[in-house]
Image (cartoon, rainbow over all chains, first blue to last red; front, side, top):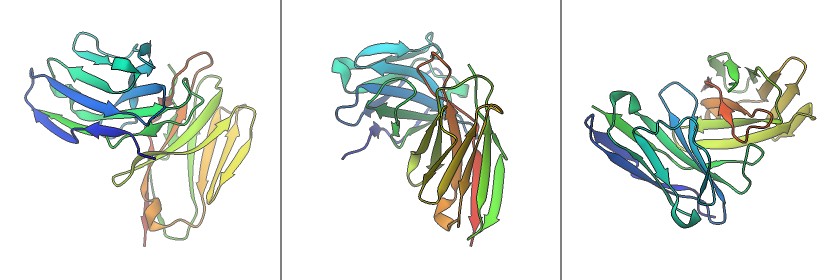
Length: 115
Length: 111
């Protein structure tokens, strides 16, 4: 079974530039998550989709971050404009079940450095 | 939202020894999960324990949950170099449909 795919793996940009990350979840997984993990910390949930609807985006900085999940499969996360404090690893995960009871399967992450 | 707090923040032991990590949380939970993260394999689910369970085993892993103390522990027996990683507990809130991760314990197994 193929895992969660993410691209790119690394990205370096200057502040105020925009950047986009892509995620392809495990086939058949209805729930998709985007997390931000700052160095030395645990992952923080940014947004959770159930199929192509948003379940939770309470911690998404909506003035600069946006995400979509077209057709309930792939998803993109965008930052525009980026700030220095956005430097982090962005993790995508998917699960069969929604909510907190299911096992989440994580992709390798995209490491973002904002200069 | 609540967050699990792992203790210790870092742990270094010799190969073959047992490693114990603890997680404390603040409010009632439905379940608690443990994940491992290393540079080679990313973040991987280890075990889920429900609020009505007290102990679960998976291979060399043993997880306990004490809801009266709002704490959980992860025991890795007969540690191996490959166990070197960061370990995170993740909790949910009653009614909240999401996981909240702690800061993690960095475990180093010395050969």
